[in-house]
Length: 366
Image (tube, rainbow, N blue to C red; front, side, top):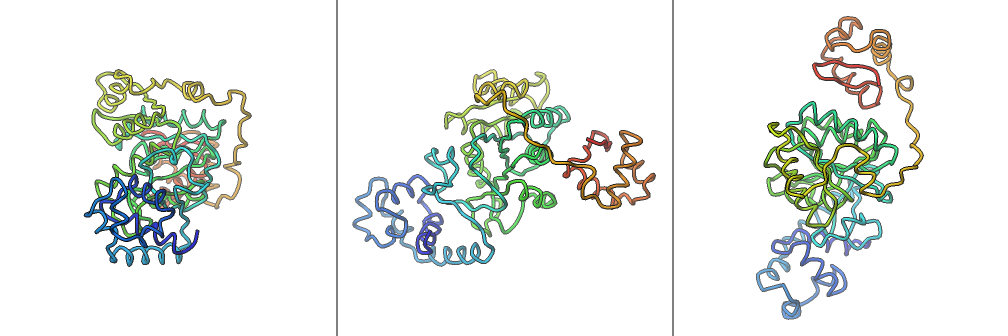
């Protein structure tokens, strides 16, 4: 894409009162984004859906400077981007009328695989939800899907981590720009996500994670995938909004049922009861509903515990191999590794799919 066209798209994206739907209409009517800013006010007024207020914002020169600044950032930092007219734009998202005209991406994302699922849910995930998510992605790994989520606490980060463990591509959809990460505690997972997929966002690099941005983010999570899976949710929550959006896009929605008095299952139970989601008992439900090939050969698994381990990592592996499940404190004592160092090493082993964490700060080999 030529520099003048990307600058025009950035300017258009930053224009107040010009949403994605109207922006696409302007582009398709006039020919391209760059030509929009060469049109006079009289010509623009002839386009149905645009008024004087929108045109005033559209022709505001301050947006041009903001666009130039963002272009300098993405050029300097080698940030990739994708326009809704590009062949490489995600197929399912391209069919959504309000999908972003442009989004930015980092990592090693490959949208050629059309088996894309979104997994979302509460930030206060229970052991029940965590166990279901782990089992689900382990069983689905033979179909090699792309796993999409919002990189938030709870279900989101669990889905990303389990995707990485099972050698699956995973994509984090951000509610802010690429110049920061939210929540900050998840910065430690960024490298692994980028190696196994990456991040996408429609927001300029210095955009903060504002409340309204999360709602906008949810439409990408719902639109980019063939199906949205709700692992756990209270009676109200952002994941239920994502489910509603997915339904509006005529996508499959699945919800994991729970006991009627469990707070974090109320949202899922209500979706199922209201026929707004398929009841999800196991991975087989997804495979059948999405018509995935039941005879697909399992993808090769990456060798884990005996390759590229540090001395301390190997020491932990050897100890767990001999002694089975062990508490974090016991591992620290027996391996003579300080707890403050051990926590980081255990995390690295977990991300390498060598060990898995269990409730109560217990760990065991995979």
